[in-house]
Amino acid sequence: METLQTASAKLFIGFDIHKRSWKVHCSTDLFAGKSFSMPPDALQL
Image (cartoon, rainbow, N blue to C red; front, top):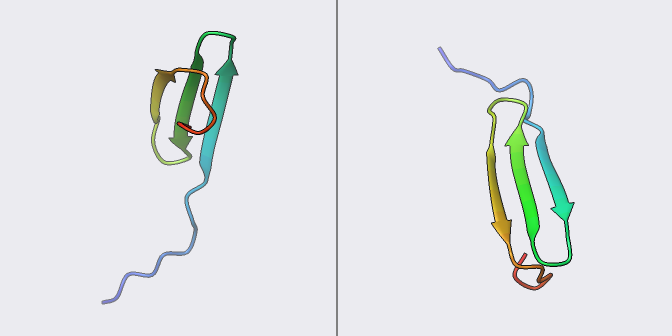
């Protein structure tokens, strides 16, 4: 029997932007996701 995917997972990305650092959280509707901090640099993002 062949399994067919009937729906696509949705990706959610949240940003908490401050002068000295950015916090990013990525998750989907299927799993909780991951958070990380990074320097405020658009090229690095």
